[in-house]
Structures are given as C-alpha cells and as structure tokens.
Length: 82
Image (cartoon, rainbow, N blue to C red; front, side, top):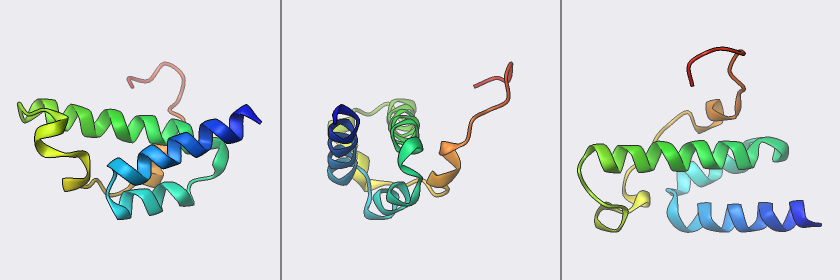
C-alpha cells in the first residue's frame, strides 16, 4: 500500500541521516506515529543547524543527536503553542 511505501521511504531517510540511537528510537514509535515523529525530529535537527549558522551539508544531521525522540510522537493539546 502507499502508506507502507511512504513509511519505508521515511525510515530509509531516517537511517541515512539520523544517528543510530535516533533511528532506533524512531523504530520504537508506533507505526501510525512514525511519520509525524520523523518530521518533527527532522525539523528540530534542521532548526538546530540553522541556529548554529551552518548548513546541513556542513555539519551533517548524524553528527549530533537529540534524546527523547519518542516524546515527539505525542499530540499537543488544542490551542497550545507548537
């Protein structure tokens, strides 16, 4: 199915660009929350690189890690700042 194919692509990108620990944490997230968690982690890592004034190519997303990846799967309450 398209959903399975999309999940495969998302996990392939995660394996290539995230640290081993981040990738393994993402694998532990329930399948229906993996895409959301992936994009939140990607955005967090991209924001960090930009805040440092560097480009993704210069620092590489797999050269630093965030812990608590599993927490990114949770939905925030309606009306909260995201």
